[in-house]
Picture 1 (cartoon, rainbow, N blue to C red):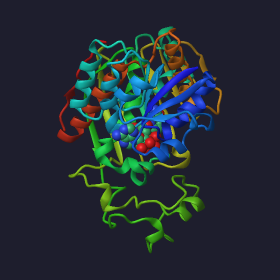
Picture 2: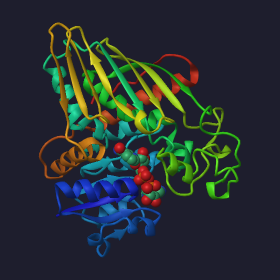
Picture 3: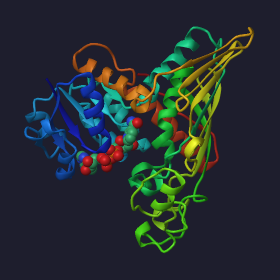
Picture 4: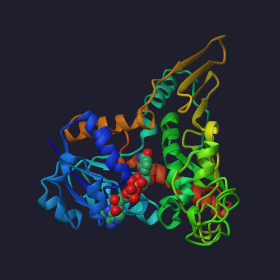
Length: 391
Ligand SMILES: NC(=O)c1ccc[n+]([C@@H]2O[C@H](COP(=O)([O-])OP(=O)(O)OC[C@H]3O[C@@H](n4cnc5c(N)ncnc54)[C@H](O)[C@@H]3O)[C@@H](O)[C@H]2O)c1
């Protein structure tokens, strides 16, 4: 039996535990939780955990009393670094949600906390470990492109309204969508290129699609434009345009923030320089819908091009100097394209004392520092050097 303690037993981490960790190791039990919303956290537990779980006021108390084998942090973004820095003091494997920090202050504190820590971390970066991305990296290592010189990463998000009508609209928690979303993409792009990002130039557009002048607190059921608004539940349903199907906060509301006070962006892009000397570009768009969904990368070098897309779920390898192109199709139907299962395998292996994390704390920090550089660059219009980590 694996005794797991959870800090913030919310929607995402409870799903990871129920559907991924337990798929790998059925005998994972949630024995301790730190979460101020005890009723909500309890409701998300599996039946088998409800009787025995204990709630604690803080990590120290839980670590002392719950005889833990492992920890998981599943709070919202702004608390990941706070709890992870505390967890660094314990020799317990840690499953840590992304982004692992939302400010330079938090990230450098985390870097210090882990400098001498024995705590092994699986950062929740499912894309990097998804079989399709791993296959792309294998092709590149085999020499499919020669030396990788360029990468293009694209992310046309078909469910982007959640960043404006769900809790993610709160900029004070997310600090924008480089940290929230691109943290995955920058991470897997560094993995594919086999090299860290060292410099970023970025741009973001805000308040041109989402946000606006509708009154704070407005929800569709109280709005007299719901019959014509493309974002009302009835029109999302009618147009098959996706997003929350129930009553929800207005995506054109004042309370989303403004470009001056801070708000999530409609779209953002970054030019990336890698330590290897290669460069790349990344773009993310949050108002795309339906079949516009695209997420993946194209890596090229003199000898060839390797590209893949998680939505079409296939990888293409083009030989530049021979008349052959291969297309490889991946299996379907898995959470985060199979990446969540792979993370679970890594985490359970760590708890059992075998194997290593493929997404350690240093990968999380490299990504956060790249995202913070992108955020700063978009705000200042200047190229920003990325803080480097050695771990
Ligand atoms: N890795 C991925 O691919 C992926 C996918 C989805 C979400 N996420 C990340 O997961 C995180 C959680 O998202 P969610 O939708 O599950 O949120 P959520 O609101 O459902 O869960 C957050 C939980 O934290 C609890 N909490 C609040 N304050 C706390 C405190 N001081 N101490 C302990 N617990 C506290 C809340 O009560 C809640 O149970 C987000 O940061 C999000 O970015 C990651």
